[in-house]
Length: 90
Image (cartoon, rainbow, N blue to C red; front, side, top):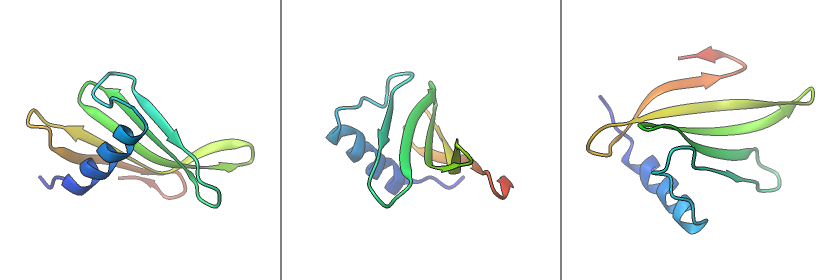
């Protein structure tokens, strides 16, 4: 299975910069930058992290895309789900 060391590194640096301990259940961060969709990173289970961009459509927030990474026992991030609200789930 293919792992994503670069994603793990980038998300790790972002969370460290903002004082977020992503190893804790329920940890999350939302980053807003004018002109870009908001970025939300969340520890959704003890071994999974969601990384998603959100935009607003008809007053609702839509994740586009939302990528879920499984974290194995060695700490490797493995993408297991990609959801794109406009095109479906993979």
